[in-house]
Image 1 (cartoon, rainbow, N blue to C red):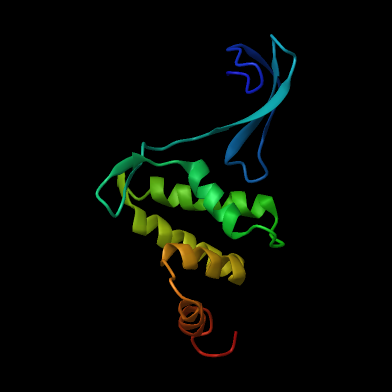
Image 2: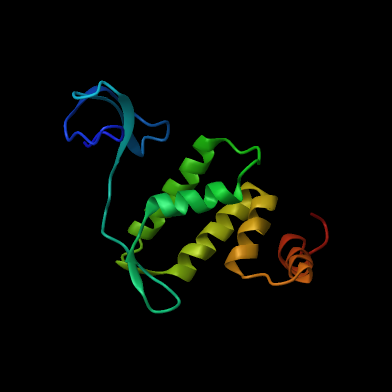
Length: 154
């Protein structure tokens, strides 16, 4: 494993343990060159996934990109980081077990919308504003009226 501090290709594993949800192995490493310590995660990957974007481009699925977009939506919200990890792991498992190696970006977006709707309403609206390309303030109001409070009791 390459050291993120000095770029050395050699490191020693000092400690390994499963994550809380047992979906990955957390490894504490020590760089043999500079002595820096860092953490890596090892996860099972059932299949290589390719994302088909709206414009026709294809790119390799990136779990960190999914996690980053969820963290951005949940910034400054009181949601436990472990809970976010579990949600991302769940989405990735669903994608990998779908039987498809090519996944439409819209499918991933809808899965994130569904997860955020359950996790945090503010993050749900934040994500939707980018995902659904809100252009005006009235777009927020319409979305909240139709999606967040469809029956008026939220």
